Length: 426
Image (spheres, rainbow, N blue to C red):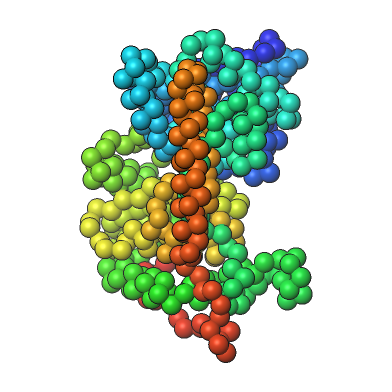
């Protein structure tokens, strides 16, 4: 489909051909999470997770040149701030106290998904710049209170700042298969010469090697937690979208909804979402089941590409101590190691992840506020908040879980890891 040149807002991702959207994504980034693919966003819309009365109204921004799609952005008109993982409730309250309407606002984001990645997709940098400027211009003309872009790729931050958006920072915790330089040898995948001269970094080949790189306190804690989890007598099974059955997705939703209910909240995703996404993107979803006598008692859900495992949801039908840590962190790290994945992103927040080998990384968001008075107030707040993030990261840097140097005369801790929940082949 061809359109006239310029900016067009589309009320459904289906108005864009999947191949065109994904081509823009591939042009914008060497690798991108599955949740940025056309199929993921379309599934959210088609299963009622967004649109309707959800408070997420699709208004996807597209830029056309010579009748062809040149740039695009996942954009929503929001009537609340739920499901964003970057909190602006205080800003909305300040607007309300001054008799102003904060909602609806515009939000460029992946609904319910705090996974960093490109948000401005385009064939080239000029097209991406033009799209961003056009969206901000239209937000101003249409008297929207604000326009926000959440969890952009780091290389998009200068583009956003240059467009006049205020940059906000946050912290997540990610695991990477790169052994710290101060850790014991971790069976490097490159040759010894490559490692010595910086051509390759040592990579852990199994969980024992990863565990050996941690300091004594953290190793002891993880072994204890895994031993307690193994004591529940469960067996685990990894499934992808090809292998999981309908009843498996039904069980996952039951666990997912129960987790939200335990926090006195309502689930964002609908029961049909997991079924439909597994059919549309079977190689991009992972389901980890914990079984007792072949009956599931807990589940964890992940997205996956060729490089990274993304932790998303979990739940259990029984209160089993340490099972959350086992399924959501330790089994995930083991899966990355066995499948040759480079990274595991553990989701939003969670300082407790640090002691389990996930390290802090800086995340970003960008904000355009229409009212100049509030814009100045937000900018002043963000300066202080960024200083706080710097201090927080410095403080976390003093509590890294890895050994600062190998013990005298010890090359590597070869003691076996704690007893684990038994795993089965995929």
